[in-house]
Length: 255
Image (spheres, rainbow, N blue to C red):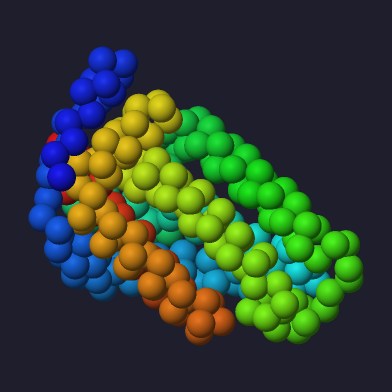
């Protein structure tokens, strides 16, 4: 699909983006696995941190049914930012510098202002989705107190309408966030650019490579499902793997 995004060129000075074949995400994963094996300790440290944080959040959210659903979607919204340190690990290896967890954190400081601003944007989106989830919950449950077991059973039974509405809303929001963050956060970690330029570059790269990016999005969702299905243990490996792959995708798509 040939989308030149000429309107973006008229308003933004964007880096040149490349077009890749539809099966390119599999190459990103293969190279990401090699990167993970090149520095397993710091990479897996990010995975452990993600899993532990997820356990804490889900433990708290399990007492509030609408927060439980929000926490799952919120992970998909905020995960790209949380992986910023992993992008630095791959950057350090490519430049022949020593890699470590502490060094990757220090390297993030070079454009911390824009990364923090992006974090605020994603946080506002997450909070907005939490409010939408709460409203949907109130509409379908009528303010009734529902236990977690009853809630999970009702999702596919009496309140299937809530499930459908929530999934559609979460899907549409995730599509927008994916298009704007697919490569923008590694770009912010790599270059001294502003958030708007990074987001517009990401949008352009996604639209110009729809077959490949749709496959990439499907892979991310599938691996995320595996991560949750393994009670977050799978994220110890899957999170850094996706982080390294995202950096490789950025380097592949942006000159």
